[in-house]
Every structure is written in C-alpha cells, then in structure tokens.
Length: 120
Image 1 (cartoon, rainbow, N blue to C red):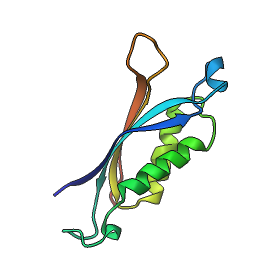
Image 2: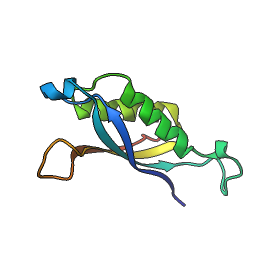
Image 3: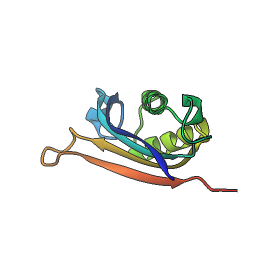
Image 4: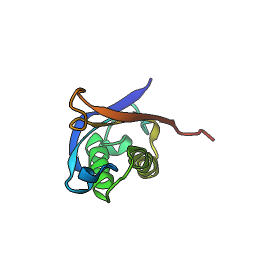
C-alpha cells in the first residue's frame, strides 16, 4: 500500500527572481506538492498517524515568505529540506514551482524536483 498527500496549485505571493522588476513587487507563485507518506498505522485512526496536507501547505507558505529568493532552485531546495526535516513520515516528495506571469507567450515557467528519503 502506498499513501500520498497532494496539494495542487497552492497560489502564493512570493518575492522571487533575479530580474530588476522582480525586486520591485511580489509575484504569483504556484506550488504543487505530492508526497508519499508512511503512516504509523493503517487504516488511520488519528491525524497523528499520518501527515496533514494542511500543515504541509502552511509550511510551504512559511518558507516562501521567509525572504526574497533569487532563484527558484534555491527556494525548491529550501522547501525540500524543511519538509523532509519537519515531516519524518514523508518517504518521497515531488515539488513543482511555477511562475505564471513571467513570459507573455506561455502559461507558466518553472522547475520541479523529486526526492526520496534514504532508508537505513
């Protein structure tokens, strides 16, 4: 059995980017997250048996708001590090960061990351 939590299109105001205009005002950032969870027991009997998608969304929001992130790569690594540390029941993580308002001719630009916790 494999259990995943999913957060689709979390829309945040973020200070991100290296272009001069990206230092003038925050911009919209869309975050998608899919995380495999190793529940403490199945079927779940309490939220503490797993990972709360609401808590993960809040953590993502907190990390994004910490500072101006010149590169999306810096931000995505900060998110991966924080989520892995804060949620030991996460076995794997897929993150996607998109900037929808940067290039006129495309819906969005962005990056994605896949991470797997090393098993002892």
